[in-house]
Amino acid sequence: MLIDQEKCIGCKRCVPYCTSHAIYLKDKKAIIDLDECTECGVCFRVGVCPTQAFYQQPLAWPRSVRAIYSDPLNVHKETGLAGRGTEEIKTNDVTGRVKHGFIGIAIELGRPGVGARMRELEKMSIALAKAKVYFEPKNPLTNLIDKETGHLPSEILNEKVLSAIIEIMVPKERLLEILKIIQDTGKTLDTVFSLGAASRLDSDGRWEGEKLLSTAGVYYRPNAKINVGLGRPLIP
Amino acid sequence: MSHTLHRQGDEQSLSRDYTILAMPSSGLNSAGSLPKLAKALEIFLKYNPVNIGDSKGGSRFSLGSDDAVKKILVENELVHAVYRSEEQLIGVLKELKEADLGLSVTVGGLIKKIHGCCEKVNLKPHTIHMSLGVWGKTEKLPSKDVLEISTMCGHHLVSADLIVSLVEKVKSKKMTPEEAGKEMARCCICGIFNPARASEIIEKMAHAQ
Image (tube, rainbow over all chains, first blue to last red; front, side):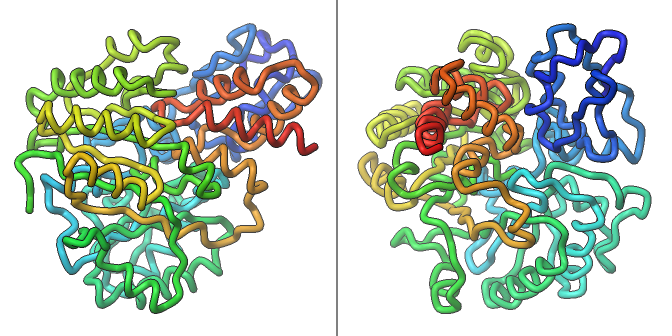
């Protein structure tokens, strides 16, 4: 994103809307620090500028990575969906993607609101590739990851995104082992990540990983999202 | 895409925050899904949601009206709504079940409350996505109050700086908490933000300072 310096009147109204603290004033004009900007598009879309000074410059590779993972209006060619991830559990009643006995794990680096360089994501993907996990093929990040080594293309490593999700699937017997790897790798990161675990519910409404986490003392929040089984044809 | 997961806050506050979304699965039951999505949105609207939106176009607040959201619906996408009570959620789930649209429906909120609502309309929950919290360099996070608001936009398009600046405006009576809630909701493009809950938190923050 750029600001037309001829149009900018230096009113500062746009500054707090930036999700990456990338807008600042210089010589009484607002400027965007392009190294920090994630191309999320909020400043442009909310129309806060009284002189319409914001404009979107063409985004070529590798800078385009920023918008792909930061602007939710981008539709990914891998998924056909807007946003940063996949249908995951939202359609699991018709896809059966998360099966009994397996746990889907979503590691969203940069969330909530801190942002992440792609090199931070690579630290996590390398650790997970070493553990021979299954990377969700429809996730828009997966096609960038070398599944053997976990490496990302070197030219994108400095790109900054609001967040991006690594989605994997493991047999439930490996859940605690993989969480330990994620936790240990997390200590090496210069950002945060939100962690989610998905599983089928049993007939008592309990999720298959719950007992494992409780036994291991792993915290989970009292709120979640639940697919209520209305999709058709239903995978029982 | 876990944009309805990871909302923060205590159980009292979260008990007034329920998200619901309906979608087909791409390539499986997405053909001909547009009228079903429109019907789901119509049902959502009957129960007075505090926000609605769709994943590819915008929300009540980013587009300016519910009619604008209806007009931009396209095949194979996702429609959302946000509610403040279990009663609303039960009504919506009951009607969605009766409509038998075949779309997948996912509800976000307190687990025990969602199970209770499903029980009341005889629905058997299928799959769950749990939040295991925030890990990594957590010292980079903003305050707890700010996170309670910002995590309601799962794409994190509501900045911490905006929240802090709106608290100041409410405190100095340049803006009401309700106006602040709507202003933040304009940033959340998909419409999953709860402006009513956000305005309550903003008001609390303004009074605490």
